[in-house]
Length: 435
Image (cartoon, rainbow, N blue to C red; front, side, top):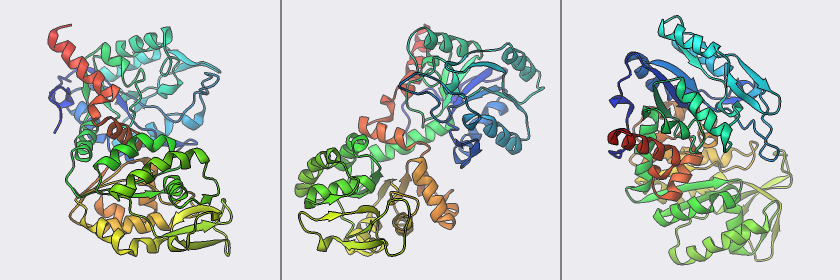
């Protein structure tokens, strides 16, 4: 269910209106589209706007072109929206115009030229299908505070009559996701609505609930992992999270695992001694080298052989036979709600644990399975392409477009506490009051 306070695109009068849409089309790596999944998920919103007579201006961020230390914005072709525009041209058989702009080599874009306003006229006359603005993070002010932030918010709002946010994966309150809602009528697109509905199934779930969580840094996952642990009946850990847990519980050292991560994991170990929710993967994969899966330099290690004080080289994966363990298998097969934000292997050379996980999850035909995070989805698609294609339209599966957003919402206990969502709700309330 959606909150009644959330303004929905289906309730907006779009006919003849210029509609500024914030998507999360952050799919370009080094100038090439890695996976068009996020673009495909927004086509429904774009079709709806055009079908209802709207004139679309699209925008998205790509990558992280701003250096947080120096504030310098590097506008490289590697993070241009051009590949996205070319994809949409092929997909929709229509032209999207990218406005010209002056780029400062250190400050990015301060404003667009008059070409954008001429393009809006052409769009209204149906000479072009739509406009796609340059990478939002190329704009000075998008991630800043003060004058340039306020200036960009006003500038963008002057381009359009209506704003639509269909970028649930972009939870940071930047100008293009939040500030603009202070100026023009604003609505949630269909993808945002679907992500919120399915996220409610995680925060208000049907038990038994199994959570599978991994990550390359423990400290960034402490908050959401704590919330997930409270709700879950069983938890499977992977990556650095599991390595730090093993170090803390068994008093061992694993190469590459920082003492700070081990220290942070001790609270989880203490909590689990009482609640016993963590399903230990009984076999891990140790490697002597980090960069490759070299013959003779990696081996399976059984936790039953681990002793206090032992030291191990890099632990880079879960051995697939761990999923044959009765406790692990039963927990997966009996779960009614499963949330997966995990790649089991720490490097691409060790994919076997992830492949075994996704294969085992597919055997549960009754539970709702929700996947969060671009890495998780990409790994699933690459390792189990047949299963991936077969479940894309399966109502028992749902693929979130932003793993970080999902974890942030879980940590807060609700998607409605995210600032971009709050901005939409506040906008609706202001319009209701006539402000």
